[in-house]
Image (cartoon, rainbow, N blue to C red):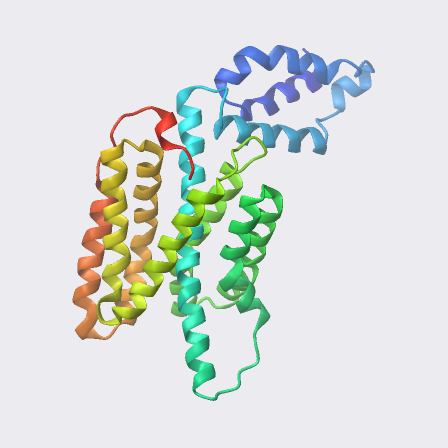
Length: 295
């Protein structure tokens, strides 16, 4: 075995075992079919293009949409649901941003728009629209660009404020990673009708938090637990797993909220933490992968 073949086989280890069992020899043969020079075979390495293509294939096979073992398909469904839920969480926050802008404008205060904040706050709307049209790559670009201002602030501010910012953005960051992993070129496109219903629900949750501002820390955990119970009853395995992971990543946000609120409202945050904890730890029924499709 030449050094180049050994390096190609090492690169193929990023692929899942079930895929390598069927395709490894064929793929290595294709890689080496035109590499006949002895010096090349001993000292060359896989190219950047081949490495990138292999990493993309590893994502598509480990977070599969079809044509893969049930575990890989379910993992892909969980990642896509987690991405969608994170976008819905951002859409809920858009309601708060719009309300804050209305209040500021109504007070007569003139504030110049900060475009980095506009991009960060309204990016979920753009990303959802791009996903519905099947533009997965652009959806990832927009979602990633929205993180740049926050990332710069988190790196430059190493104090308590920066740490709290990291905890607050953690659910959205996890959703962005899930978006990159789950929505590859073979992933299904969310259906417009059901997705609009989910978006409408996210807007209603944001409005409910504004209307019930005295107990707003409890609103989202109550809705999260209700959807979690519904997913369990209907046997929506991937949705249930995604909701559990989202609840887990929301716990740091609950801590940040607790630290920021006045003492008289902190009791509601403790209730919210308990509800989020139940959502994270609740069991998931075993059911068919086909029962957990995207909206």
